[in-house]
Image (cartoon, rainbow, N blue to C red):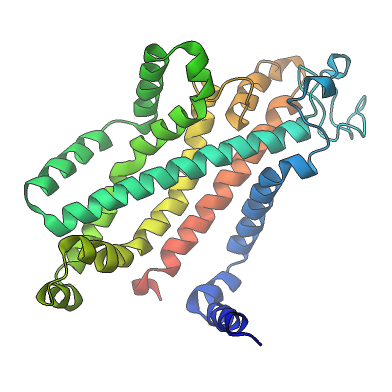
Length: 311
């Protein structure tokens, strides 16, 4: 057996025997949540391969099949397992592609918030002084404002400052920035608290004694030891970021209609909810609820599993 394969086997055995894996195996709710989250994520990633139709291909849209109910309801067709929407698009295919956009925005936004907030927080916690005071006061002020209002403000500024065509082209990036910049203070405060503890430890003092530059100490020593709580916060934050994207899209200020996410599908479907076409909004809403609930359960489990006081 080659050295890389042997190393991989050792790592795998170490994971199987770890306290984290033991805690995972003993939590049926966590296992179910992991299966649900992984299924939705894989289905979204593989949407071009597993979806029955391409809902964004005009040639595949049949207006005569609009408002077709699910296959098990009277009037349904096996061709459209979950029915069709008001434009005749297959709802299952639209769900897969919509979940893809929601997850893309959620992952990118929380990654941006985590990287930006963690770097700022670690720097403030290690250096202290006026920089720490100024940045933390800005974070405190921002934390008093609901994230959705911050995201709405940023999106409104972008719509006002940019031409409509340009905004439609970069709408997803604007949405990622809006959600990410609204979430960075939480990561900054968590990383700062961890850095305040780490900077007084012996290994940091030893690094200073041997003459290592401050930026090397921060990046090589302090930052890696602050990633545990940041990872937990990012797991919970992913669900909130997906929910924020859905909220903004439901309000009509998220992704453009040509790239509908789960929030856009729910907004479109609620217009037909009381006319009897319940499936148009029910299945996107159900997918969003299952995804957010599963990720939240995983985040809560990870927080408890990594907390040494609860072991």
